[in-house]
Image (tube, rainbow over all chains, first blue to last red; front, side):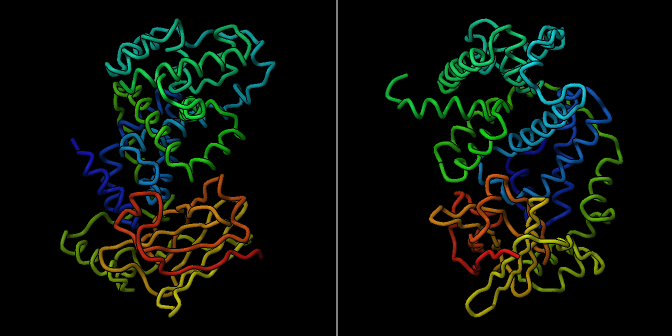
Length: 182
Length: 231
């Protein structure tokens, strides 16, 4: 296992153009990030491309790592998750979600066994706080983060107007924030 | 919800929406522009990023294909690196590079590896220079890619220190574009929120600890600066 200090040191060296440190970061984190990207995309070929893009960003943006104040793993996971979601949203079949897309019937992606497995695996504190949210909103948070679902997707899934969905979810986010800060 | 102001509450929800990728592109760009200057908003975002990353806690690691790293290196450097070399050599190169010796560039990354190339059709350029020209850096911005190419013409970081590049637009606080690598040339991504602000802004380089300013604002001396001009 590598410590947070190792990763921070390596990222600092990567910012200075140190390829050896870049290799160290890759060795320590690529399997985790590949797992996250695969989870979002569920397509190995796409995930391999996204993984490469993620480490290109790591190389180029290492100098800005400290600006956001994130832990190194969170920084890396966030880059990977965002890149995977960007890729997923660019898929032709999904396309840009429009108002008409909300009206189209679609299988509910949030109720499969895979979803239940993830729900069982969140860290305990986060899980406890998600459990405090009223019905379905924990799934909305997970769906947005792990599936890249948009407000339009969520409005469709919960069968409510988009603005209602947004009002709801913002309220739930504040509840969640309050609980997580306890 | 105690003594929190409504604005601060709204920002917490907004930061959560941003972290979840729920904002529209316009909203996200506006959020990022605020993020660059608003430490409280940055902290709210960091809280969400940390907590939401826990959603991946037990996603099983999956080994990427064995040639994946070679491909990444090829895309970044044009060819795979010969990894490492003896530890003492790497250490020596690190010291040499920190001292700004041209030797380190030649030995460390190969004489033929010139690093990134300048853009063919830059939309802006700048020359950042110290008063005594002990540090001179040229910059060219490629608007189509949102990337800034920088090349150190003269000088380098002080021993054990790093050079960090900042853009200063109008009266705004300096915003970091990142730490310059040891190599003479670098290709930096300009955050989307910053791109519209480049015209007429100032680029500056400050002296920072390795890895860059820990605060998000310049902490050391400003070593060189220059205005961005349109081409």
